[in-house]
Image (cartoon, rainbow, N blue to C red; front, top):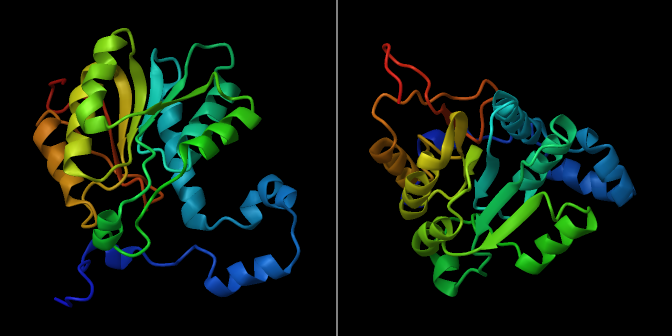
Length: 247
């Protein structure tokens, strides 16, 4: 094993294929496109892997149409997935009560975090900026952010808001303690037929996520992958039958 590179399995397939090269990114900057061009014509600039990621979320969202419950993301970062799900809800269920709940502590990384994280793997977005991003689009009633420590405070959150049920939950944390606590709290609140999505199941960059999933999901749960590949890597439909049994 190369001691300089701890990732030798799944990460070796995470290649730039389908993503803009560094040269292309520099060229984009030189071509003089306006911000309006970027977000009105985003397929011109987004890589195929980025599009594949959001197609995977769209696939799961479509499975939940007609199901009762809200949607949730654990590990919000810049809010791309939460905002995407909220906009899908606006398109497909404009008069529903569905909301997207985003859970994150929005804490700036400590020196220790930066020291131990692999290069490029510090994910931090200021709470104030993402709140403004939601507000400027008029989505503050659709995307609700909860600033808390998932490991120590999520249980108390649900003890306070006992009515909350979900039809789609996306876990984008990667650490055992966070994923384990999330499964313990969200799985009983996930509607039968609802979808739980995992960003890094069966991936060496986050072994704790796989351990928590295997430990806490029902043993006969069907863990499926996405046809587009990439991340998210897997999902489970609650209640999907295996060998004539349901969970």
